[in-house]
Length: 258
Image (cartoon, rainbow, N blue to C red; front, side):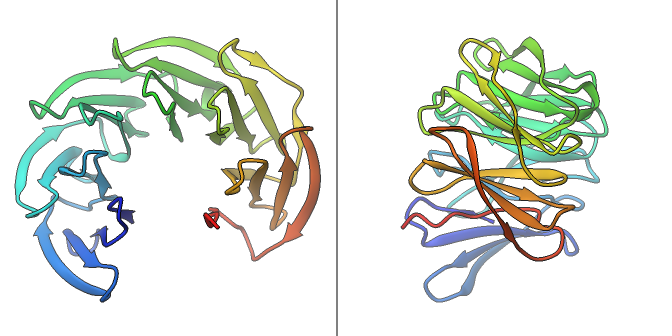
């Protein structure tokens, strides 16, 4: 789901019925519906909260809705079977990953048109945007690398080898360090992103697939899918504090803000 900044509205898609649904979080009631294309993957609210973006996986399109009325505003063809969507902080453009096409599609949200398709050497997994919107980091496990996209020029600026199979990652609070989960090696890879310097890896559990920060920004949390545990890393010392057993094959992490 995606939520409005005041958390009063939630947006979710139903891939089985091809619908976009708006929910009032206080009353838990549905307050709006809209028909989408075939097999919508997620709903993404733009930072200015004016638009809702829905990638339709079977149609290979990005559908654009008015966030207030849920009225359709446009449909843009993107890479085959789109999944994830990242939007620039000024809401001017969206970056849409398409694993089957090995592409990142860039959509102009002011004109509702496709700007370009950026061809990758492998299937994209996670997209991690710097807070200022200047760079987008795309993990490509097939290449053992991340592709670094300059969002101002909408081009791939650099490719960086970063381990065996980088799956997912997160930036620290200062956005100067990127932490990547290397699922094949059972490690977290710290990168000083400004210098493009890879620091010593931190060993965690088996098949780490997701990283997240705790609310304080002092701890890195890593979900290990094969060893069924959560690794807790102290960022100041880059040291593993503990491993917490959790349920079978954890896939995601949410950290409360209090």
